[in-house]
Length: 132
Image 1 (cartoon, rainbow, N blue to C red):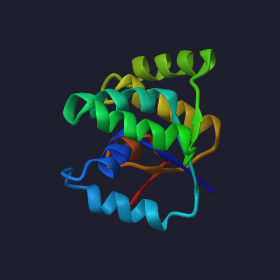
Image 2: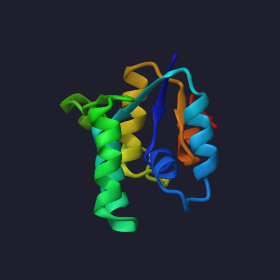
Image 3: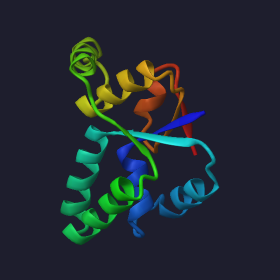
Image 4: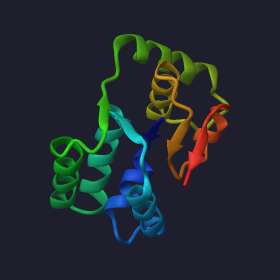
């Protein structure tokens, strides 16, 4: 089984002052599933870490996620981008970011039904179980 990891879950894992830090760290340490994330999630994460924490924290997170290969990083394909754009337009009543839409289409493409996320938007996708 694979689990898609969202920006907020990664952020909570790396930032001690985040209210979900302990829960995120505990979940990661007990997890046995393959972790999947996307290049868009990492873009969002590194930017957020740099702005809200520091450049040093952003680089340290990047070294863990990219160099230690603790997760598989899926790159958005042109088809994913087009499908995400259509989702973004179709679900105008939702508060989904474009990155949320790319996550939705990647999870659909890879048949992933579990997301490690603190974002309720994943539950709005309809077929996703959010953990922890």
